[in-house]
Image (cartoon, rainbow over the protein chains, first blue to last red):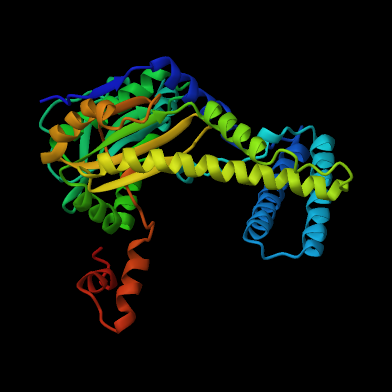
Length: 113
Length: 280
């Protein structure tokens, strides 16, 4: 007996392209070696900060959408988020990191962001 | 000569393919990586299928395909828990130690996955076009709402809020499509794993666990899906059956941890008794 495997698609090229896009987007491991240990660590730390920043931003937008914030509170949160985003841009520049590099592959759980 | 031989042996290891629900010999002759004979190391009523192998330094596609081929051959006769490619032990006793530690976990999975196979459904949608449509609609409905004298903070919040609303609508649209496709396939599946929007265009990456008796129905569903899930310009990729790669759920609790949990009522299980006597 052999397994009768079925593989059906009308657009193999489109699937190859999408799968390569996902797989190629992230390095499998944190790149930490003596020559660029600083960058490797910065990438890890900035990824975590970016995750928290995005969560804060999303939560703030949810609250604005729900109408549970006053104009004054929106202004204050907006200023905090703006400064945080600017600081992150600055730090990414210092360590030569791109937006798409700030992610971690969590194996079976998928990507962090 | 002797030294060379020793050095060669020291590089040998036990290459593992899968854990199976049998402690018997494998009846068919299977050659593994490097042509080595594949055999089953029994542990209680299950087994770990291995071959002797040199540590592969340069992993090539052919090695990965060979590993997959052997797991699939085993799948013809047994329930399998496939091992990750290139899982090696130094000696048989190390493999047995792992079997002893996680035997409960392995048996639970083998029981749950008996007579079941995995199928994959991937769907691409024109995500970029959908997003652009949502952006256009959002801009139209908010035309004239711009405040030229607004502060940089207000502009920042406005921009972020727009992004949030567009993302939200995009995801809601994706959810509608996914629900339609998933409801169709779920009828034949006993378990499923759904990954949504792994990329802008990869709408759905789903895995369905299907009982053997429903396998043919599920394959037919593949063929009919295009006509039934009429969602416009979607592209499908169906595949299967596969070993149940996405449905193995390990608690990673060792035998000792499991037994200490069983002891919370102050009872000593037969396994604990054997352990105390050094028989496990």
